[in-house]
Image (tube, rainbow, N blue to C red; front, side, top):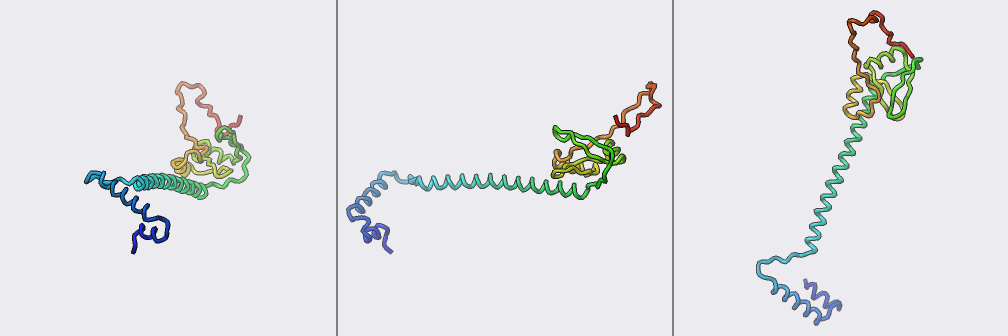
Length: 178
C-alpha cells in the first residue's frame, strides 16, 4: 500500500516539489526537538479535554435524571397511599374550615368526622385538585415523603385543668359552633 504522500502525488493534488519541501520541514522539526521530549499533539489534547468535559456533563445529566425519577417514584407512592387509605365521606352538614397555603377552604363533613379531625385522628391531604380524608397514621407516612401534601394534621393535646378554676365543673361542648 502506498503512503498518503504517494497517493496525493498520483492523484495530482500535490506536486513533487511541494512534497519534498513538506518532508524537509518535518525532518527539521524532528531534529530541533531534544531527544526524550515528547511532541504534544494539541489536537489530541483538545480531544481528550473535550472527552473529559463530555463525561462530566453526562454524569451531571445522569444525576439530574436519577433525581427526577426519584421524585416521580415518591409522588407515585404518595398517590398510592392516599388512594388506599382515603375515607369516603358522604355529604355532611358540618363545615370544617382549614387553611391551604394562603386560602381558606371549606369541607362539609359529618359531626363524627369533624370531631375526629379536631382531635387529630383524621387528616386532610391534597390529591390533584381535591382533598381527601385520611387516618392520621397514613398522613404521617405521607408527610415524611412530602410535607406539603398533608394540609391538616392536628395534634390533640388535652388542656390541663386548673384546680382553683371555679368553672371546672362546666365543660364546653366540643361541637359548639360560633
